[in-house]
Amino acid sequence: MSRKPLLDIKNLNVHYITHEGTTKAINDLNLALYPGETLGLVGETGAGKTTTALSMMQLVPDPPGKIISGEILYHDQDLTKLSEHELRKIRGNQISMIFQDPMTSLNPIMTVGDQIREGILLHQKVDMATATKRASDMLEVVGIPMERYNEYPHQFSGGMKQRVVIAIALSCNPEILIADEPTTALDVTIQAQVLQLMENLKKDFNTSMLMITHDLGVVANVCDHVAIMYAGTVIEHAEKHMLYRTPKHPYTQGLFGSIPNVEENVDRLKPIMGLMPDPTNLPTGCTFHPRCPHAMDICQVEFPRITRLNDEHWVRCHLYSADEEVSHE
Ligand code: SF4
Image (cartoon, rainbow, N blue to C red; front, side):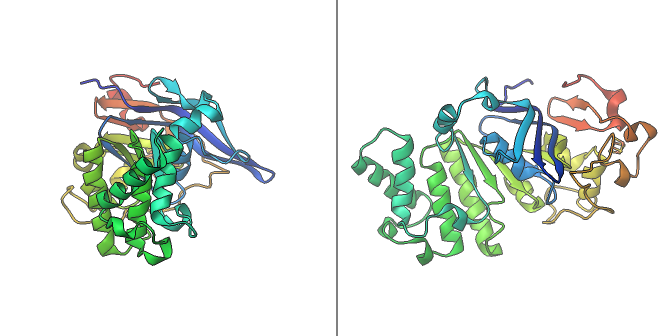
């Protein structure tokens, strides 16, 4: 089966360049998001998950951030080559993003209804009355009575605020929704409700979703495919059940070591001996080699290429080079 991704990131490199040195935040990263699916982007803090999301939106702060090379293909256009004017038409309209803390996205001195309406007016050619009606409807869609249209963010709980953010993000019916740890700031009981809401809305709106998370419970519940990140690159990319059943990369095997199947209720990544490398001073070769129980001589000198194990599973590790069917590069 060979499907065409909706968003296809190829060999992306993003650096932050300061007087103190160069931080290699994203290193030769490949990622594919397919229509109507949820891709989980999983990794520890500092793996480069948020920089990946900001790159998709072309919102990496420049300076100090710079996309050094690579492509981000969306409908056959490379987002890295578009002008700011062209990108503004895509952001919020075709690709929307939800951040971890709803308060960073909401304006404290504007009513929630008006904030949803503002996004609609910005991206759609509709009059004020139509936009107000759509904003009221969106409140209802995310489970907030439309009578609360004229209330302010501080009158809402954390979970309700995140519902408002979701309403803003979905109000223009984007093709892609990027959710950066959208439930981390919420109470555990509220997390499940918000995730369920996002899952339902994704289906209703036929939106593809990139779910950034370090929570394997979220991955098990909502994702179709999973990309595992380490030191700024995706080291394994697979259909969810394949990844849980047969994790191939030693780092993924370490993370999933205590999780024999997707049904098991384990929420956190299992710590692996050692630390993620300093992105200003990455190890040569495979960046995981100082922590890898299977490291070979080649691992210290050569950055592993992608080995495609089947249509739904690839890995960046020298252990599988001999199994290679198709090189992705
Ligand atoms: Fe380990 Fe080598 Fe594979 Fe890296 S390439 S994960 S060091 S075996």
